[in-house]
Image (spheres, rainbow, N blue to C red):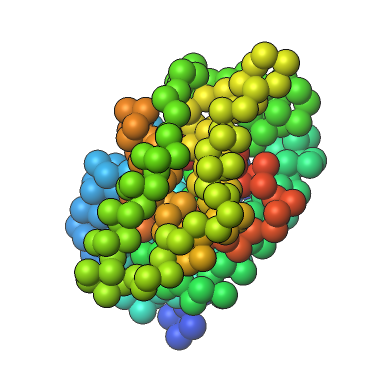
Length: 320
């Protein structure tokens, strides 16, 4: 490719391939030929994965671009290239040793490279960059402490990647210029304490039956859950402190996991009440099972000082 931009080099451990990864438009790009070399799969296989990726998870218009490339005959052609989101998604789907190598490389070297300046405009690398570093650190700790592999590790990376697209919003927040997006839902139905306890009792019975919980599961300590639920609807100067369904759901999820209102099962109960609250308010849940598990682990591993950051992460995932 013809460009004056930096290149990231990926080399396989066997030394058989080295791929120049183009840096442009605040991300990295590879064309189909490079993806074929990178993953050691035919173009037809790579193309099929990309087609499925566009159908399942990514918007084609935002992750594909045409770049001028000089061919061996000296002529310049426009070549279709795919950005980092597509590259990593293909890497997750390709079942090969090289695919595993690339996943590890992309989750460490490449993300570190982007963090150091190429993925973000230098004019806006400020406090928000520190937040990104905090999330990356938290990501690494979660992966190590919980020995996450395969799908769970992938989903945590995806959560961080999705959140990393909201720097403009975070910058507006830091400068007190942030307005709530139109698709946040302001009118909420409260989750009653008795309703929550009844639902937890049913969950416990189910888990005990299949051997995934003991009698300690869901035993409330000092009516702490009642306090958490009451906090969701608290007001200040006549206005609700948490102004949307998404904000209340995120805080409920966080507080149940971090405050440990139960003797056992706080992560599972926090996840359960999170979904229950969203369903009660007829809000579509946009996080799948593995993603929810990964998010619960992120909350559990996080420092209490990161609460606002984590809550904003959850809200962004709900309204993306």
